[in-house]
Image (cartoon, rainbow, N blue to C red; front, side, top):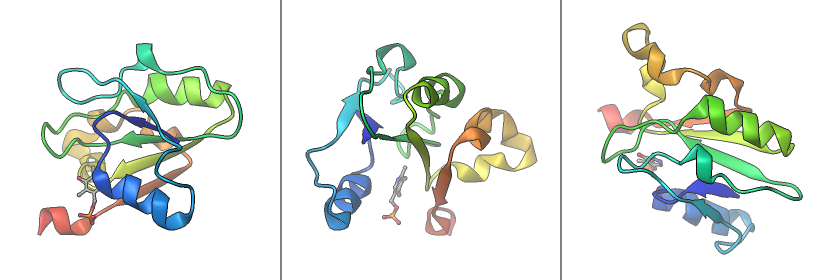
Length: 115
Ligand SMILES: *Cc1c(COP(=O)(O)O)cnc(C)c1O
């Protein structure tokens, strides 16, 4: 499992509950806004899930989906989007923030952040 270093704690908890274990996580360094750094993405060998985050709950920043999905695809990885906070940006006025995210394999969002 490949995540940004500022991964939401619920994702690590979910991995444990699903039986993947909390230790099988590669954390990619992030920039000053908490975005996964595409230039620090690791070389992957073997099955992998890459979890992008659409919307950092502290800064609002989006991982650079186009660059990271390209690297994940080269490794044959599944790409999941944690869009709990930011998937709603796909609404027309903010759609530019979602560039590249349509190329992921799965997405999750979370309506309670907006209630
Ligand atoms: C809130 C949040 C979650 C977890 O959602 P909960 O339903 O509150 O557990 C996961 N990822 C991100 C980016 C979040 O902002």
